[in-house]
Image (cartoon, rainbow, N blue to C red; front, side, top):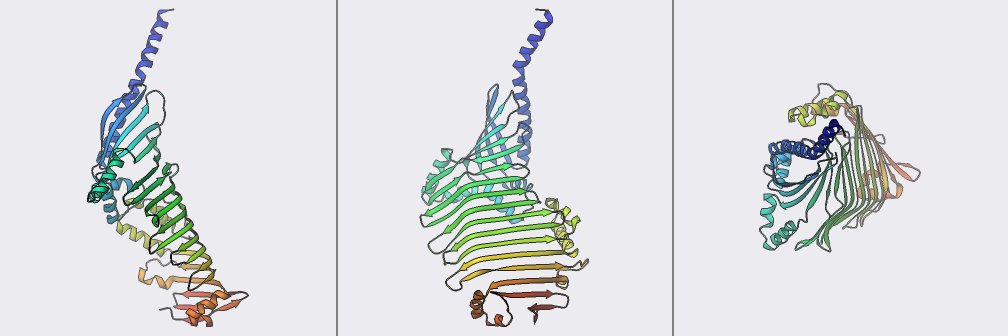
Length: 415
């Protein structure tokens, strides 16, 4: 073997040996940058121990030292909270402490793992549960056994990918708490999933929810759906079999869809289905564009922006349908509302003048037998109703410029 081949072989062996060391060193440098960034945002990260050659593990201690700064950091990607909301979140965060294990490969570009175990709740929460010695003992046992754990995944460049909470199911003096199948994924936006959560004080007093799905994509799209939501106590309660809330903004149009199914209250009021569609169109495109930077706008700038939206006018369409309502007092088969509103362009006008530019046309349809029930409660409605087949129809017209308010052509005072 020639001398050149020996040299190349030696260089290859040395390079192979030192490559993991080089990667480990670069990773430590990047970690230090992230530590400083989090420090500026109210989080202290200490590296307790570092080990591993081909694969590294670092034991961390993570403490939220400034709840307000960290809350501002979290909200910076979500919205522009009020001062009160910011303070409330800050109090829930400040003082929280985690033990973390950070794992990465020093050979191949693979995902980075961070396992987090809650060691201390916030100062506010600790002060609250410490007032009861039995509760304090139970919570301390949960924390000492690492029962509250989160598993975070980053890509090889350190970008967040997902978070998953370890299933939690514990019995406490005050009841039991379940949190099952909780995870968060970052794709185009943020997706949150929850299989089940239940807080029970007793068998007869509890809050429960299942199959929660939440999607959020900045300003343009958001959706939340859930099943089997139930609140029950000795004196009150409500159960919802299925619920969906979905909203979307596209150019000059925003839409919202809302659905409730199988609703039942402790007062024996039942609603089989409530469905609603809301569409706002003709919005001022430049104002909608500015909403994308809503986090950077002051309160005065926001007020001016919303005023500009109204000054430029828009259309509002609402469709609502209700099916099978039953209650001890008023059983109804349901009904439908179709409403179209318009605010005409009114550049320069102030909020107190908006009524002059407002028009509305609404059609309310109910079953004839439902009308007979309503007329016993509001007899004056009988003279205004229009009968078409098996339905009673109320056509409502509002014209703020006149001003005028009509029900099936009968004028009524607007103010």
